[in-house]
Amino acid sequence: MRIAILLMNRCFGSGIHSILDTLIATNYTLVKADHKPLFEWDLISIDGKPVTPTNGLVIQADYSLEDYLKLDSRADAWILPSVFESLTDYEKVERFLVNAEPVIPVIQQHYDRGGLLISICSGSFLLAKAGLMENLPALMHWKSESFYRRSFPGLKIDTHNAVADYGNIISVIGGSMSCELMVMHLVERFAGHRTAVDTAKLLMMHLNAPSTKAFRTNVETTDHADELVLRAQRHIEKHSHEDININDLSNMLSISDRQLNRRFSKSLQCSPVQYLQTIRINRACNLLELTLLPSTKIVYEVGYKDESSFRRLFKKQMEMTMESYRQQYGSRVLLTQV
View 1: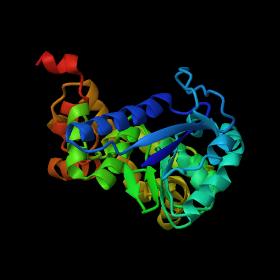
View 2: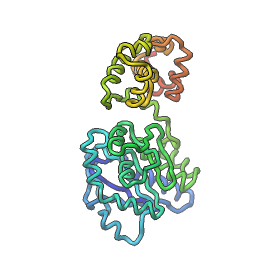
View 3: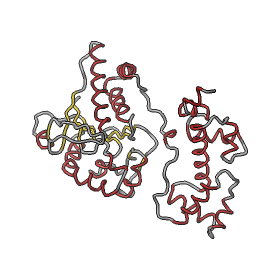
View 4: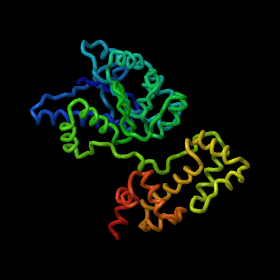
């Protein structure tokens, strides 16, 4: 299986190296099991010149895009990498899309021939630019979400699942584990579960993606233009540990409950009650991370009176118990002092 890996300046450098390391480990695993290596790869930059990723460690391309397309053999899959600008500034996103313009027809033609396309985080911007995401939720880091919505209004976004396989398109969320998870998904799909398990064990990594929910505490939710919703958010955040009545909040803002719910849904894709729950869960996470306060007391500290109700909510939202969250993210120094 031949893979073309697109290189772009400001791409996630450690991710590119992670892809290569995982592919090498997979071939090693196959050889040790008396099979032939499965994967081969080429690094392609648009002009053939080296690229400088975010970590400053220059990556040399094997081919320019033009020269690669002249080769007799074609890639079975293209990997479109994450580019850091998608997380920081919309003008940089626009520049990224302009710089990537030459690869768009290549993506379209590869897809039309039945080839596999793999996007990692903002790589989905290129698939959307090529018109291939009309009915598919694009996976990406939640920091990229607002820029994607601005660039491609109306298209679907998924910032919760780690990997989505749509057949000829595989979309991956982003973050430091995403490249490894993507390769392991390829290994399982094309080399089988046994090889995927053996490679994962060799690299001491998880085969199946963990839930992304635990990573999403303190997510910024102010990138909208509704001043009334912003006022409501600030009030909820300031008084989240108190009893908050949504009807009183509506009255304070001189708006009906129905209108408040509608404007929250439009700006934040949630209701005021759901936003309050999120703030309380985030505060609980912070206390679990930074203190040794018993979880029972944390429940009351964040504004809940019913401990069992909050524990159920926490487990539903974070996909783990409060105790498991502390074990995973709590201060190791504090925990060893207990």
